[in-house]
Length: 368
Image 1 (spheres, helix red, strand yellow):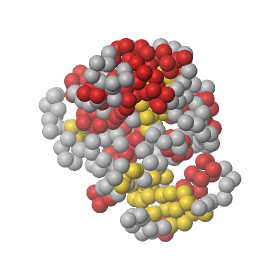
Image 2 (cartoon, one colour; image 1 turned 90 degrees about the horizontal axis):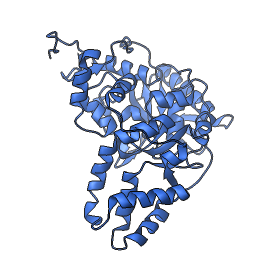
Image 3 (cartoon, one colour; image 1 turned 90 degrees about the vertical axis):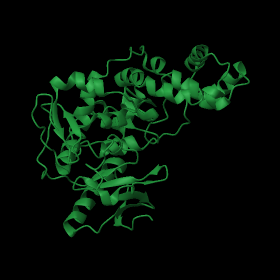
Image 4 (cartoon, rainbow, N blue to C red; image 1 turned 180 degrees about the horizontal axis):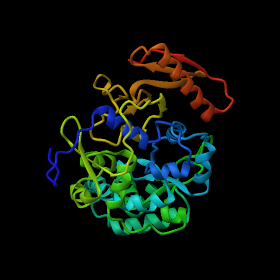
């Protein structure tokens, strides 16, 4: 492949891509930064369930405790809402107010799938009514659905709820999302919860640069996979003079920031315990930089992802907490030295997440 300057872009092998991605994902060594700063750097943490963002930060941050994320969430400096790939993410307040408008096109596509169930529904009026309802007091989707159904009794109730969710930036209010607390999903608008207006949808250029800083080097398709957006080629072309380019082993063009870290492929990568839904494994169209071909498809069953173990930087097994034990399920039998490293990292993770609670660490068999 030849760049626009006429020179051949250098090739980055799988291990080089692996180490570069792990470095930017704060996974080569525990980072010394606040949970809020890490959430900003990573452009959010996927959060369909409450606990995964906490385990994601425990794998990345030096000295992390669950309170380090709960506190800014309780203070409304961090919040949970639907953004990237139309899934729930934990974002900083600033990103709640900017990334959500950026991905509105994806929410519009989602809404289009329900249009036939919304005949006769004025969507602009629905958004106004839904906003008034959830800003009066946080409401569950069921409560919101019932209130909207009273206005449009012939519409499909589920479609009405989807329309509200797609037209408005709805935040899950606390105590939902706080560590060790329970609470049903209740919603209000991001503007109301955070006390400031949503900003106009930004030009995607800055987000492309931030994505590369956290996930690069990457292709256009990689970022489109991460964001759930299409037609980003023109943005990358506009930014090309500010970027450097490489090729992956298959010849795909990769873009990167000139000064971004690209460690030696032989850099040590300690074991890491990642939660289900970790964005490390969901943010590239080509995941071979992290998932060896032999293990492709082994981290999911139907629509349910498993918790993943990284060894030497690559997916190497699964893990779970079961009956007072951390059960490690490697895909292949690890050497004694690797086994000791896995146990040590498991102990670090357990100490961060569960304090003085007593957990055994044992090795088991991968689920069928």
